[in-house]
Amino acid sequence: MPVLVRPMRCLIWSGALLAAVTTIHPAAALTITPLFDSSIVGATDQTEVESAIDDAIGTIESLYTNPGTVGIVFSQANGNFVGQSETADYTDSYANYTAALAAVSQAEPTNTVLSIAIANLSSGNQPGAGGSVLLTSADARVALGAANATGCFNSAGTFVSSCGQAYDGVVTLTNNPSVPLNYTKTPVSGAYSAIDAMEHEINEILGGGGQGSTLNQIVFCLANPANTGCVANGNYANDRGVLDLYRYSAPGVASFSTSDAVTSYFSVDGGVTDIVGFNQDSSGDLADFSTCDNVQSAFSCSGLVATYNVGSPEYEMLESIGYNGVPEPAALAVFAVALAGLQTVRRRVRKVQ
Image 1 (cartoon, rainbow, N blue to C red):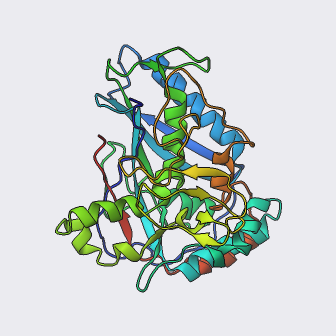
Image 2 (spheres, rainbow, N blue to C red):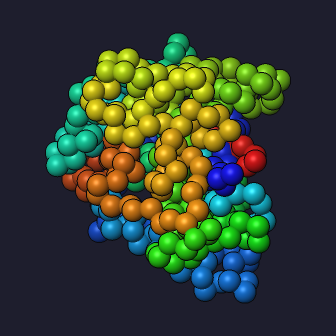
């Protein structure tokens, strides 16, 4: 059986987090700042683990040039997974979110994936009545310029409901002896790529992959209607993740189904071009890919190391939610206003099977 690569996502309502969203000044490029916790530091495999994480960070930093810093706490734990992650989601109205995307696109016209996506938003999914678009703290702050969309995790990897923290999430790599890992860029028969797993989970913190959909939360809440998170968020079925806006079953036919009998795919041109299939097996993340040989695949294949470059579907995935450009300060002021409606943060957790 392939080993599942899924994020942990926690759900909790808090009070208003953003008193205002202000203009930020661009840094040189996207910077991912890792903190290796005590489960890595001093471990017998410390060198290999840190090397794989550094390789994953280096790849992603080389691909996306948005100014800003994303802090991530890295750890390892024994479990039946390759990698998992935990981050926090902010919410905003569909109108505010799409206006922010449009401002980013205007500031970075070379991101043609984003401009095409914006032109075709009307064909895709939209939140239902009372619903919102959910986006991670990293996506809101680094890709869309909402300076006060701060991280919600401290250096111990603990969620802090008031946010204002240095870290946008926690990424955990397995140290289960029954799940053999390959820490290098060369495939090893029977071993799962630690580099792929780390790239997968960093993408989740940035807002892509399974973190980009609310479908798994819907599955969970339908099965557990009395759960505190489901009760607190009465509109969970009407919310949409950032990748739900690009989920199609046919040209012009948006898909928002949890059924494993449905075929859905990622498309930025209204469903005309099938970039990659979305996973429809709810035991995995429904915004991860249906393949097993991509970084963002819902289920891992052993014996390979996936390619992650400008030709990979992951690249277009993050471009479609605002990554890959370095906005000018004036443009940042425009979409800072567009995101001024951000009011809540939701922390979502799912157990890894």
